[in-house]
Image (cartoon, rainbow, N blue to C red; front, top):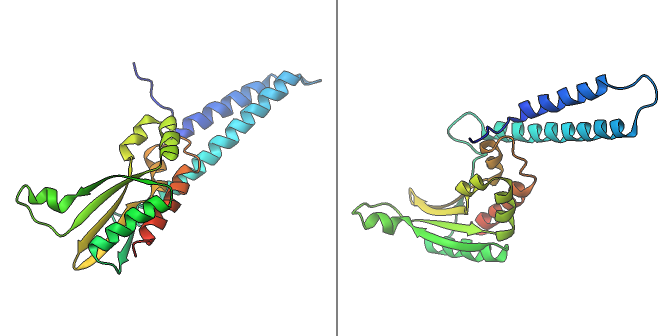
Length: 196
């Protein structure tokens, strides 16, 4: 049977209850060292959980309530042509310590089925160190990997987009992702900006 992952609020309540229980056992005189250490550990854990909850709430707030979510994606208009923007993304990927895993030519794939659309390529990029760290937190984060940068033409404009990794926290409540999503986001935004 698969156990349900506790929400951050449930974890906070659990630690608060443990802390209250330990404090209720405090003797009137001469506190034992082991009890003091237990209280310190529980207080540290509670601080960490509250900080994690704050990060998750900030990520959720950033996600917004509308379909057009500026916190979900980062999109710029490129002054380059479509092919030059794709080249700029691939070069910036290597220059920033990431690797291009695959490039999906969406226009060509759809054309094989007799469907037409303006040029679009999805460029999958990855950094093994960051990928490993995220998979250690939760293997299901693999559903959002590798990171993607999309170059496409819309209304005669070449656009370059990526999903902001900081939005991942909203999909994995109760998981401490640390600052990896922000580090990866900084790099992805630099890759996208290189294609302006």
